[in-house]
Amino acid sequence: MSIDATFNYLSRIWLFGTLFKAGRSTHAGAFYEFIYLLIWSILPFVLGTLVLYVTTNDPNINFIELGVQTFKNGELLIFTISMLAPILYLTLHDPEQAAPFPHKLPISTVVALIIVTCASLFSLLKASSVKDLPFVFSLSVALTIVALLFRYLAIVYHKIRLPQITERDLREPQDTFVEKFRRHVEGEVVKEDFTASFETHLKEQ
Image 1 (cartoon, one colour):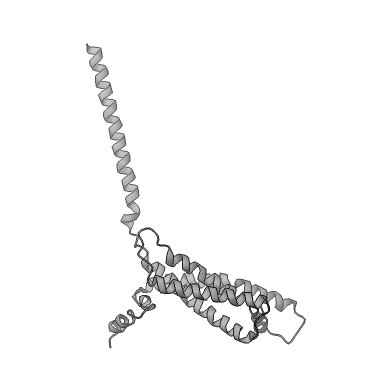
Image 2 (cartoon, helix red, strand yellow):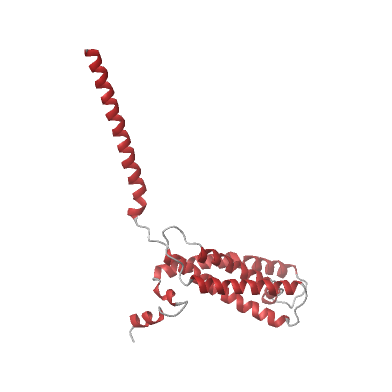
């Protein structure tokens, strides 16, 4: 099977097939945006870990263990919600001249279900009603990974549906303004010439 045939087959996969229709430049731009998003999103966890590390009195504890403590009490659930919430806006809002969001209904449904699940688990954690804390922590890690995948998916799909802006499209408003201004000026010149001719005619009478 050739590479083109393979990509053609993969592009028909439900929900994720559109990823293989995107070009390299689209994936590169989406990945670049996603990396910066991820860095700013995990910055509170990194800073919290750093503060705990430089202030702890336990010489045996390492940086990784302190890092886990910063998101072991449900913080990952809130992080997951913050990753997924913008996806609902992207899927349900179509910008002007943009194509419909690919797989809008299933993506928005899955995202909404994950958000509700995370919010419910977080409320149970804060109410001290959870009996199996390791299970909830493992589930929160899994949901976070799913949320990151969906966030990258949403970035790529959003870039795909946006119209391709050319230099001609950018210049069109400017050219339209110049044309309207030229017509307006020419109209005023015609009016002034007619007024001057009429006044001259009156003087000659």
